Length: 116
Image (cartoon, rainbow, N blue to C red; front, side, top):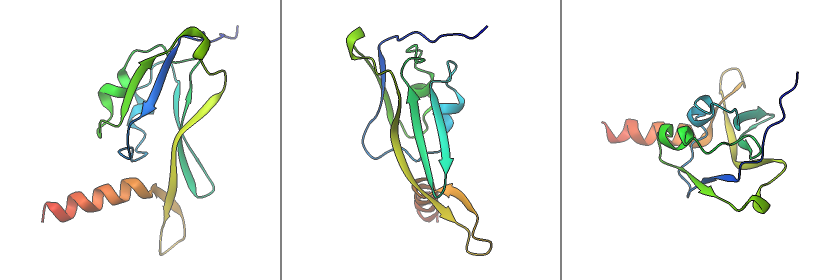
């Protein structure tokens, strides 16, 4: 039997430029509303707002504090999969494989440089 998700009226927003596309929020999303997708040379965080139940696990587990939840009136619920943020993937210099969102590589590099 197929489950039909309910439109719950919660909106997940990416605040500022803080999202690194690490996927931690998607891994903690119990209703599977958030998904990290990779295709070609791009990674994208998408949200199916019909599935979001407003639990807040994505917000609590985001290591960069880049997400927030907003309650919408029922008429404001999107009926489609929405891309919240996207970015280019890094390419390996040796084998040309795509492997890591550029935003995440930049964050790791900054932290390594700052730690000496």
